[in-house]
Length: 131
Image (cartoon, rainbow, N blue to C red; front, side, top):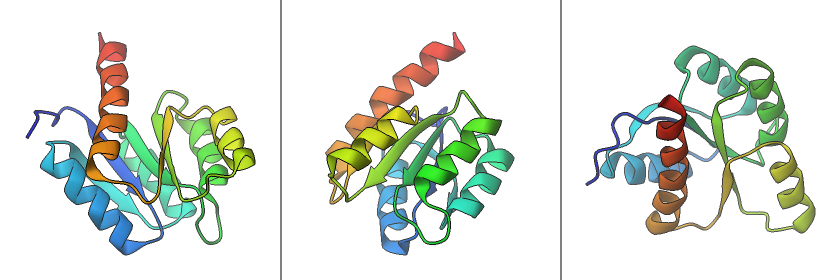
């Protein structure tokens, strides 16, 4: 296990199992998972309240999509690092989320190594920004 407790993470996904899997992977590697949200509306509320370093944000969710939630989050928190999580490999979707100012993305289905490699790369940016 790595010492990543200085990095706070918010997990946003409408699928309970996906949130649980991400939580277990991240906590096992020492990340401080400060909260979870199941849709875009609760993502904005949680991000505002918890002020995480990194948000893992599902693209496809009911009511408010991850892309719409990202736009709202960006209005309030310009500097937060966001990783989009998606099963959609469609070039238009990938292009749209990249243009939205994300720090990276994780394609579903994912494995622990892919998640940790992607989050670790962003964690390095978080730490560099603090210095």
